[in-house]
Length: 411
Image 1: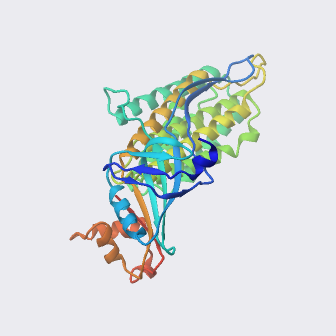
Image 2 (image 1 turned 45 degrees about the vertical axis):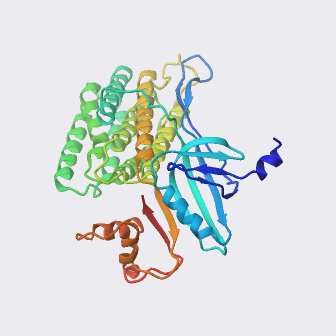
Image 3 (image 1 turned 60 degrees about the vertical axis):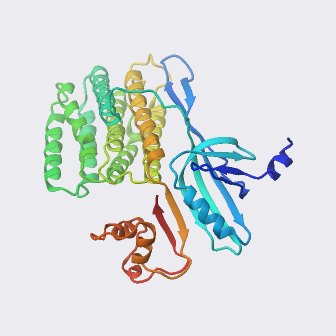
């Protein structure tokens, strides 16, 4: 079949309930993307990077299609009902081919004349169960992260020799600045007091680093990773840690010695591990829908990838120089494994979480009517509060929601 014939063919979607839809489609500017499960290794006196690439992760596809004609509203309603079935879709696309996938976000727009536009993000899935594990993902992730923490500190104590006064000053300054970044964002006085105690102990132990660098490093790591224990949502914890990561990025140009680079490797590596810990320890209600889970995945990967890129800029060209710096292979291997383990489990959560739906109000309304429409009403008004929260409704909209207003709900 020629490419002209391919583009003229109709798209066919078989939803989980077995119903078939053949809407008109248009190509998105984003033609799909996927990531590989990979590890990167670099060695002294060997140019280039050793990449261990495994099988690719599921591809993410953006789809845009239309129901047209006098019955477009009926087609839209039928499709909306079918999309709530939790089984995977079978999508036969003129360009992408056959895709077995789950939708994670669906947007409906029937404001056009005689047309309902639907935008969907789908993630390709496999039908076979993945490898089985004897530990729950949360428990296993904790063990994986702890192993990376231990290797991080072992690498530091083995390779940082004879710290200078300026090295100790850098460690102290970093700890002070990280505390300032998180101060006031904890949300619980007991946790805040504990965090302050860990902070003061870490500072006191840093002062002994000139005589014995091994004494304080565990206390410093405990302080840096503590934000993962804040009684805040996953999103707020990662936001704090992301700000702290940026604070350490600001000192990159001042890292001119091996010791200072190892300090950066250890401390920012601890932040990345805290991000992973936060992602795998959600509070109740954190991962109510797939869009939120994917947002966390993107944050984890962004912070991790930035860190790896920064280590590459710090790496010495020649490992035999007296003050040469080469990132620790064992630590980065364990860090990479912990990140990939967390992300793979988050994808599993995303595929089973509630899917996002977006519509535009057909007429003026209010929060009570719309909360009843999508969730039903309960005596404790929890569904009304959920509707207000997910749609970021302010005081000026509590009385009336105007026609055309974008509304999100989850199924």
